[in-house]
Image 1 (cartoon, rainbow, N blue to C red):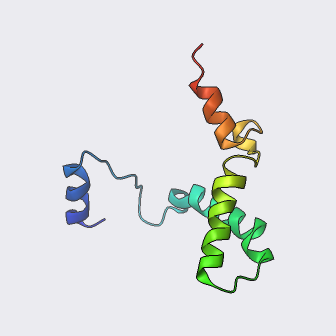
Image 2: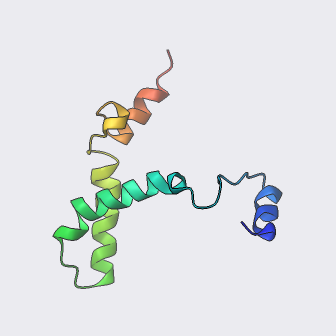
Length: 90
């Protein structure tokens, strides 16, 4: 990444998360999410306006994906259930 960008991150106490150039695994989580979004919502809808698309995507993420959809990597819990479980002190 550009030097100015790296310096700006460091100035805010942030560390960039990057590996070598062209490493396809850097975006694996984001790519997986967008694939799921497209396959479970976008490819099944005909949006007539940007607002209609924006609302449907927001509802998919906030209502379904985070609160209802079970995720294999989270032990078949929704992200909200997994987070609530992790917040419980032992």
